Image 1 (cartoon, one colour):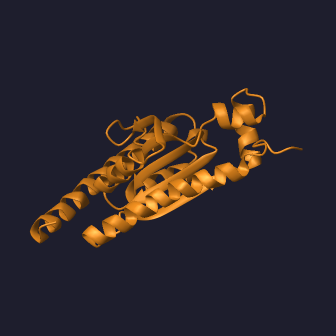
Image 2 (tube, helix red, strand yellow):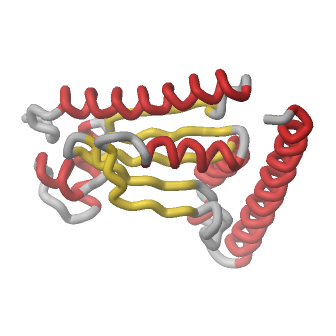
Length: 195
């Protein structure tokens, strides 16, 4: 069976490398300026063949290179996890300002929280003609999303499901409050150091 990416895999790897290099550039700048890395960790990937084919089937699309790279916009993906809220937006701004990086779409689920409490900043870029999905979160947001994914509460029906949803939302709100408090503490520290 031919690759769903056709002969484009090397181009996808190059694009992924360009975005990773842009993130690394910001990390170096922030370390030089503030003595702190804005990124706790960065996970990147090119979606596996099986996962991309499954997504095409789920969306009712033919399993073609055109579907994988022209319709579905997450063949290349990065999840960037930051310690502080301001760092999320610094990463976003740095990526959006990169020469040759076109912003196709952005969704700010930090300021516009999903009903279940999910928070993250989603960005779709086009780099050298290829889509790149970027999710930027704080550590708290990433922890909540990972735990929520493991719970699979959607399989529960009736009364327990609504209780679980309410508890997940409460936890998300508490973590968001912690993010704000930690940002405030960092701002106070930086203001006393003149940064």
